[in-house]
Amino acid sequence: MPRRTATMLASTLVLIALLCAGVLIKVPYSEMSPGPTVNTLGEARGEPVLQISGRKTYPASGHLNMTTVRVTGADYRMNIFEAVYGWLAHDSVVVPHDTLYPDGKTEEESTQENAEEFSQSQESAKVAALKELDIPVSTQVVVSTVVKGSPSEGKLHAGDVIKAVDGTAVKQPDDVAKLVTEHRPGENVTFTIVPAADAAAAEKAGRAPEGDEKITIKTVKAPPAEGDGEEGGKDRAIVGIRAGTDHTFPFEIDIKLADVGGPSAGLMFSLGIIDKLTPGDLTGGTFVAGTGTIDDAGTVGPIGGITMKLVGARNAGARYFLTPDDNCTSAAADTPDGLTLVRVKTIEDATKSLEQIKAGKTAGLPSCSTG
Image (cartoon, rainbow, N blue to C red; front, side, top):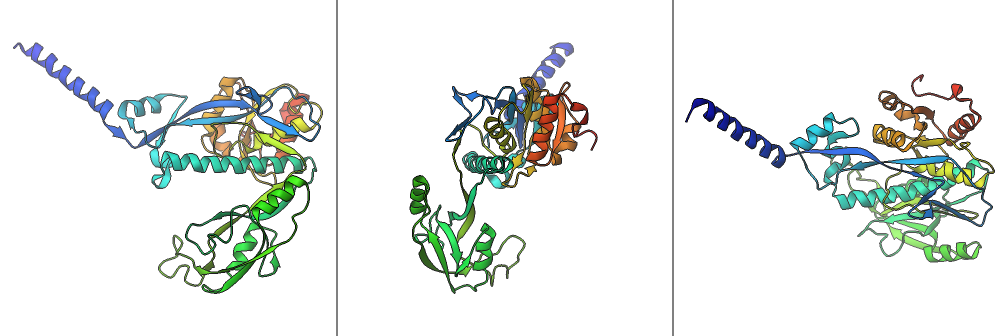
């Protein structure tokens, strides 16, 4: 066989081997890319995203778009070619798999966690919006979860309203843990509660719950927490519940949006609710997108995947992007052309900036690039 032919054959075989290796060899990375944006003032799958009944609403034009990020599934493993392509592409980011799915979480576990965070973000969005409009919202401490096999299993249930622990009224979820840990393991603690079913019936009927129940539970020793060492939790008493908050709204607010998870849409939901409950338009018809978690007090928190959300927003037509303060540095480092970043720390910051955008006074907007 002529040397030239042999060399070409060998090179071809090496190339085929490399191609096969690139396809077959999996790498521990995942990909993030821009996901769809949804106008909170508009519709999704043929129905309004925000549905408010029992209170006068006003038509709202313009856009207040929430943004999303697409990620590869927990069970999917990229090959070498996909990883290299993702690294080179401008509209995607390749990150270590454990960044998106820490502690070996399955896709099902991650989906469930995201759904729970999304549900909680909706509640906080409603509370923050109504507080911004000075509309009263009542709050109560409830049993959020009951640990399987714990002393509370079968005695307390998710949704039970916790009014007092050992006769001391509770006002915040943290009060429950504080009062329980005043005991030593093996001691009894008494909860004054309104059962979840009674509380739900009373809320539906528009009245206060009638009657309380007292439930006595024997505490047990808390398991060691990470970093506690062998003696961690030795004297710390628990009953096996997690307390949370439940809100009663003066009218009904439903957020209808499927196939979305996580807490990052909270800010935009709040702004959409405010826009629908007030005359005129918050945006003046301008296309505004944004992101950010929100708590009951209206504080805006950071999110993940900010660069991908910027790309998705700009591709959808956004001109302004409401950016959480803690995400500003990374957002300003890679902002798509034609998109103006607006720094926000609270829902009040966001509404004031929207007023400036509506009035055309954009020179004074708080900018990520100027600190």
